[in-house]
Image (cartoon, rainbow, N blue to C red; front, side, top):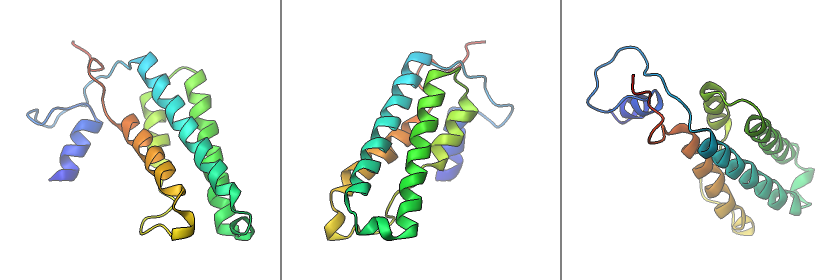
Length: 136
């Protein structure tokens, strides 16, 4: 049931609305640009922290993850500077994934708060903001 409620919010429906066509959403452009900037900065900070551990950069998987976060930060910047589209923002938000899905190794504890901020910024993009529903 939780996933159904998540999908309702994602497509702009309230919990009491029946299924039907997706409700039109008029983006709050200024707020969304601020959210994209937050995500961009969070990803940049995470990339910076991940690059500090030179021994891990020899690991191809770690390097690939650093490159992925750098690409996502670039995409957030590109979207922020162009005409906003909800579907593109959602695609970006769903591409973001945590560095660690389990416990963070003690030597990488500094990555934890940065990872949390990245995921919170991505989650914020998924939510329909107050005032974004079209009143028609």
